[in-house]
Image (cartoon, each protein chain N blue to C red):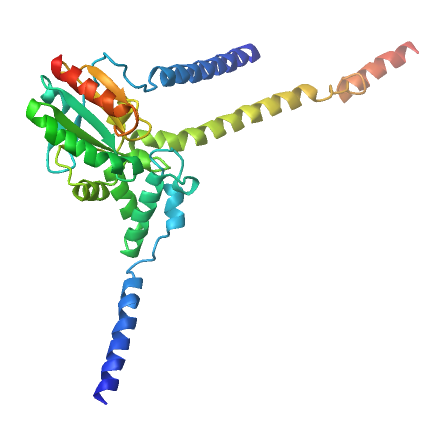
Length: 154
Length: 179
């Protein structure tokens, strides 16, 4: 009986260990996601595009930190502290680096405005000339007076 | 009005082209190349990997310096490490300084590497690769030998254990110590 109880306790402990390790207080990030966000420092491509030793080392570090329930932001911060901001594929959303985010948008908007103005001007140039209005162009009253005057000569 | 608009557009286009050209020239001018033998080695100050504080190359002026760039993920560095340590213990008595610069590496892994190979010469960390870039290093290991005036006596692009490099390294050390 004691042996059976001991076996149950051992089995419970064996199952509880991995279960505790697998649960995090927040949704776990993934290696695949961070591989696209982090650069390989020696080959200047993202980790998912590189098979260099330096990239593999960073991937191993990320995997270990994910297993320890570190968030993507935490892992990125740790990598920036070690390698500097150039380790991130995307520039930070602050300071001078904001330009990298806004300049393309400004460029696209400026391009759209230039295109719109161009199209508008082109379409105006191609519009057919308005036909001359039919009739003499005189108002009804004047027309009537003129008709009366002419009638006197008939 | 149309003429003014056209002129503005042309000026804007010209400004864009000039800006792109300026960027290209700036990039070409700031491209980092390996400093040539005889030149003064680029100055730097880096954090120590093996302890707190920083070390600057200038603080070793007046002594020959062996500057070794390495990384824990670099396979040839593993074979080179014991040879470097042996040379360090052999030449340190003659006033030669060995400095290890860890390149694009994770600090915990680098410390494990230093410990595993029982390296005792000062180790510096260049995680961002800024200093390493100023030496034109694109792969490790690479070694520079500097004389007492801080000028480059030799640049060995590869492990000092490589055929030919061993004798070149020793000759450079002798030259650096004599200058």
